[in-house]
Amino acid sequence: MDYQVHETAIVDAGAQIGAGTRIWHWVHVCGGAVIGAGCSLGQNVYVGNRVVMGDQVKVQNNVSVYDNVTLEDGVFCGPSMVFTNVHNPRAEVERKTEYRDTLVRRGATLGANCTIVCGVTIGRYAFVGAGAVVTRDVADHALVAGVPARHLGWMSRHGERLDLPLGGDGEAVCAHTGERYTLVAGVCTPLDGND
Image (cartoon, rainbow, N blue to C red):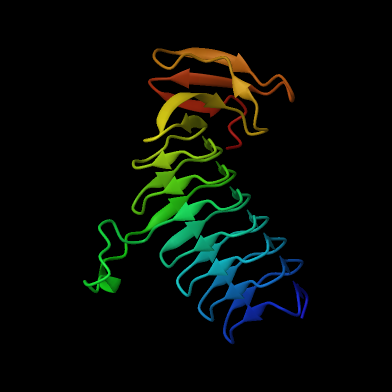
């Protein structure tokens, strides 16, 4: 075994787990889960059967990653953030055949206590603020916050806010890395094209 599992964690037979992944206290990974290399699952995390995680994913404490959620490489899930898998749940109505797919693209950050309503796509390197409720797709590099979440700005791959307009076109430089970004017709991309 080339990954670490705390003695209190449960990893069901059949789960695929990549090298260097660390699974901490009281985690439950179901047998159908696919988890990449170098991931970290914090205390009291649950990972469903139909979950796929890429490499270098960090899931902080008290997060349940339910069926039909896909987390690409480098996704960060803040403490106690919430995924849903049914749009209109009722305790008295069985809806396990109605799960909606949720996709979180590479490098995105989901802040503490935010909620991601099923069926949405969170774009590459997007940043969802703490406590936000995301009810629709989020563009690549977008910064969203609030209830419901609304678009407030743009973020670099490094996690720095970019000086770009919400409407119109423009260019900006990440203050930390010096990477240049362009905004054209509502699409933010790094000028080196390595997104």
